[in-house]
Image (cartoon, rainbow, N blue to C red; front, side):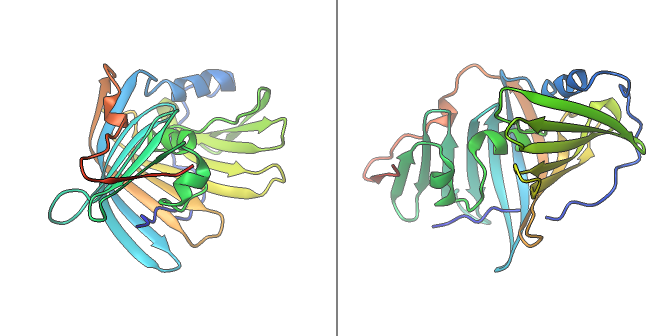
Length: 250
């Protein structure tokens, strides 16, 4: 069973919001964005998903639980009954349980293994950071930072030694508005729009991820967001149910 999750086109232009720390160094602003959800926090929410692909439109509801930088639990919620797709991932392991098929898969949380169930070209770290309302990191050790005022937004460009880069646009209260990720040749890979911030929440209420093909898109609308301190991480470790076939992915 394949759960299709991919990704909608980024609206152009910045939101009309003032930048609070426009004169601060880019690293200080990036630190403020990154720390909105701490690494010892667990974020849980109900997500209304609207997926568009070349095959059609797929709405769904899901439970999302995550902890930066690379812990994720995803449960698809049917209209009636219990979830029929469970995914749990940590830095060391990923497990997928399909109750209707009586199958349990386990292996490393690699892009290749993810694509067997979620056809996106993301690793766990990147998707957790995006779903948590921040930006994914560039993996290179040395990153060049440049910032520019662009209308009422602050534009920050990050370029790695490899040539990979990303651009983010920041609005008031250091809230992330847009992200564009590019490969080492300067070609756009995907973009993200962060929208509908609640005054009481540091996380965008709606996050739209779009692949550069302009076809596949995923819009996620959050409700009932909870942020709690992590006391233990067992929720990110699925156990093999009794009488269920365990299938290695690697």
